[in-house]
Length: 136
Image 1: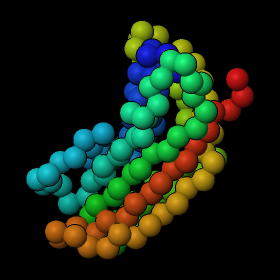
Image 2 (image 1 turned 30 degrees about the vertical axis):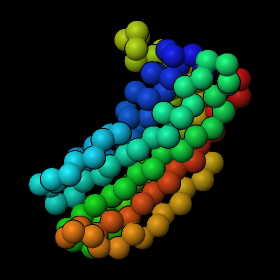
Image 3 (image 1 turned 120 degrees about the vertical axis):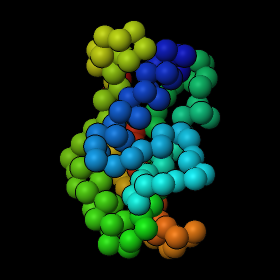
């Protein structure tokens, strides 16, 4: 995977996640250790491990954690995100050059939801989104 593709992939995954629920406060590839929001999400992409120009890019995952002070809010937010994922692909666009030309399409293979429970006053659910490159 080239460096340009890698950067465009990161930017595209970030844009994709934010598009799943535009009302939500997102922390992308970062952690807020002192949150003030009652509902927010932390997204970690695993693309840091695949920046290798000699290997082709084939598949990966997004680890999305939803936090809410109220259980009903975490359930509702996860429901909104799951509904947004239905019948969608991830478009890799050229954000680096600013043209937003479509470079690639990634299909969602599977989605797993795990109830993490309550920690430090927040209910938490984890959504793992597995995707793969469509075609060549």
